[in-house]
Length: 442
Image (cartoon, rainbow, N blue to C red):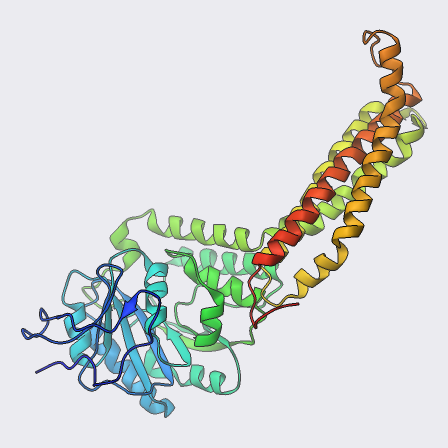
């Protein structure tokens, strides 16, 4: 069968570095056939003879040595598209060393051949070649039943931008998921994410998920490996995407097929869990910084400020200079954490809401004057102790006089003034680089 990779005048979406070329890809069928070749090495698109011209839905599937299931999987996708009453394409992003590419192409799927560089990287490579306005993702191993994709299409038609599959709301075939994954791993990490981001997902690791092409482009995924799944979920929350969940069926591996985790060894699931948690913590860093920082700052000031005038006696307990130094430490840690939390929110701000809030709170002129005033006030409080110390030839040990307490408060003001100065500059700099969902956030 002759494979026609493109009709005249029909080309995949172009991207910087992508060219309409006539390089040959003859290995699959034994004849010279045209292909679209990316200037980046070893990336090429193979198009089937019965290619869909204007797909509304793109099913984008990374594959690595899936020759056992890929033909049936493509057939499932076509059945699902037919049942949903929608025109769609199947794009297999393949880095196999077996016959997966040939089988997928023969079954009617587009095949994007890419180097073996990780699951997240496969999706990143696929973005320029996606033609549909809706994107459905999953695995080519027939563990997710793509014959049931109508639920995703219905949610897209209802206006949702991000549609997560949920095995917990659907069904999980016996033997399809290891006990620890089902009872501990996935439920625990889902709860962690919901806690960090105040979300309500039931299954954040479900591999079958959908997103609009526009949202996917704005999302600008960066993860190269397993953590792409968490990055996508986390950014969907940051972007305030309209989100829905769809029940899905999760099936066990076919006889003869070994899952990718088992191929990579016993440590692979642990590594996947660790890098997914890393993604959650990185994209949810403000959870650990903003409110905890305010609480620590409040506690530190509660200890420090009353001691500015000297020791405080509370019955047998005497709050002295040591307590004040402890309060100063808490205040500095808390203030720094709060400022870092503000910066993180700006860096992860897709809606512009956080950016506007912190630019309003840290207006340049006001913050500069407040920082300068705090610095001058702090130096003034320290001056008395410095003068007294100099008067005694820089040899007098510090005693717990009022000047010492004033000086400690002054040092706190000096540190706070510099941190405020620096945080203001960084917030304004970060605002210039912050992601924007719909043009300018200003």
